[in-house]
Amino acid sequence: MQSMFKQITDTIASVLKMVLLTKYPLSCPLKPISKELVLLGNGPSLKLFLQEKGDFMKGKDLMMVNYAAVSEAFSLHKPRYYLLLDPAFFQKEENIGKIFIPLAEKTGWDMCLFVPYWAKKIKAWQQALKGNSHIKLIFFNPVPVEGFDSFCHFCFDRQWGMPRPRNVLVAGLMLGIRCGFSTIYMTGADHSWLRELWVDDENVVHTDSAHFYDKKGAVTQATSYDMFFWMNSFAIAFRSYKQVERYARKKGVDIYNVTPGSYIDAFRRKNV
Image 1 (tube, rainbow, N blue to C red):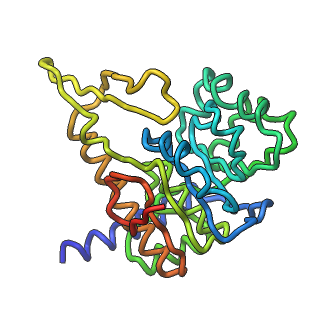
Image 2 (image 1 turned 45 degrees about the horizontal axis):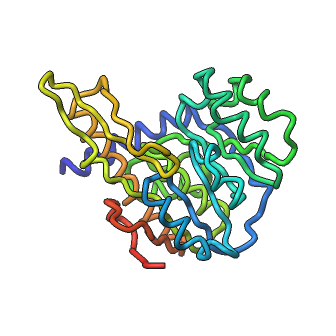
């Protein structure tokens, strides 16, 4: 009974969010060149994947995310799709030079850049990309949709929202499904945050975060959040992956997690 009540309230809340936030979705101008997409997360395992298994990506479309444009892999592998989601990318002036200028300077091939609809009203980052005709901007609805699966899938089909995108790879998978891929491989999706958190004697939570492009290894940072916040955030992300998997199966899309040691348990594993 309690679960039914939660689904009802989640459905109602999602309807209200979509009424307030959802915009008319745009079609992607760059059609896939294959039926297979490799979604590259920025986890530390991606470095070894690119070194040892780069041939696996040949003949497949690629999607990169977040700060991947600062890496050598961006220019080397020339992703057809790129995704930015975190508000910090668009709201912080420092990211103009850190991400958007490198994107504009490095991208010499046609590429779709997916950005959330709410970022459209922020002009500074768009100005940085204005001189590059290769980058096609596509605005999408990252509105969280939760509740009954039948209701959620109805909304996903119309691109009104998606499973709560607590992690950028949730949005990447949903956009991959939207683009028409029949198979999606996810790599660099370590999600091993549990072993990267620690608490000092002053009860300050620290993270030892690592990305494939870090030249000096993991970066330790003190956070302003408590452990409950982090555990709850992780739970939301892993729940969203389960929701993505149910939708993918309904659409006949195969999602494989090819990340060694990944903590994500929602998708089938495959060694490549």
